[in-house]
Length: 263
Image (cartoon, rainbow, N blue to C red; front, side, top):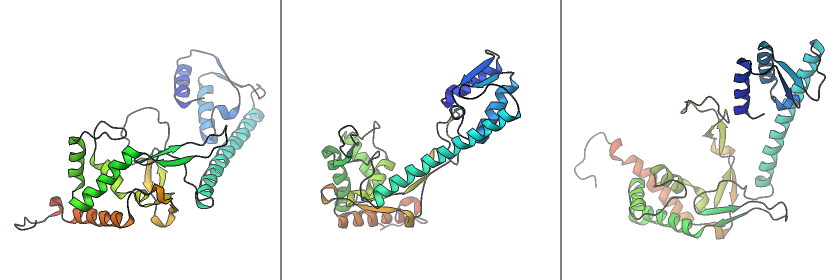
């Protein structure tokens, strides 16, 4: 049962709109023992008869024990699936040295695996976006432009970004700091976590860990890309990183005193 529908169902139960609920199996209600107990007890407080189709319908201590046991197995199965998925993804990058299909960076496109025909996923260069990426690096390296001036130039030239209506500074900095353009992609770079502040007031969240946090660099797993996927020379990429650090140091907002000949 999807969580938005479950919330609606529990609201309807409090209003007394039905007398019984038929559920196919215990794991269809919840795959967490604590959540299962809370939801089941809440429904029973509303004088609602909870029936599991694959389970005897009589109530009693033995039935409650079996529900908890099956809920524990469902929770164990969920954790096992998550662990196998994580290990499989890590093995693909670390041992097989393959790019892990994902929502890839600007300048690339990823064709997902074709399971029917047995074709593996493939990462390739998207020519129009790759041209934008190369121009952005060239403007910083050759013309010493800041990220804000690059944003202004991109928007003035009406160069469309991948998703939003206009370019923003964070999008440009994300491109300039991405080592993937120099030929090295990193796996295990971020970890999911709960957001420090909840931005929306929605009653339902699809994921509790809806934010991400950067892991220590020692935990990153580097993957060398083929030469045809490198959009920027390594020397240029490192010069740009140095320039970005200098921009932070010499930014007007970091100055303690105004200097006449600072330029």
